[in-house]
Image (tube, rainbow, N blue to C red; front, side, top):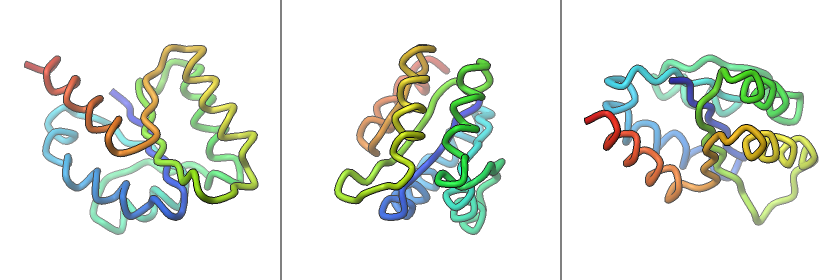
Length: 125
């Protein structure tokens, strides 16, 4: 399974915390992580193995969306910061639309991501 992880600047620490908290499951379930550039760098600096694409504003969101459309990514965790403006909002909306079109689960906050992981754990049993 390939899981995309993306986080706005104000949510990158939350993403790294979340990934570290669930490291054991992700590792045991052979989940491959792919991330936009800066989010991936933060995850790598925390010791996680992550494939990186471009940063979101430089096309990384579009790269992730393309892989979703190609069936290469099975879930997306995109920790969004709803209280900040983002110059690449059209790319963000496009990624969310592509997830909806292709029925790919999308978590935009840690609570939803937690529920998705609980279901994956249940399915692994």
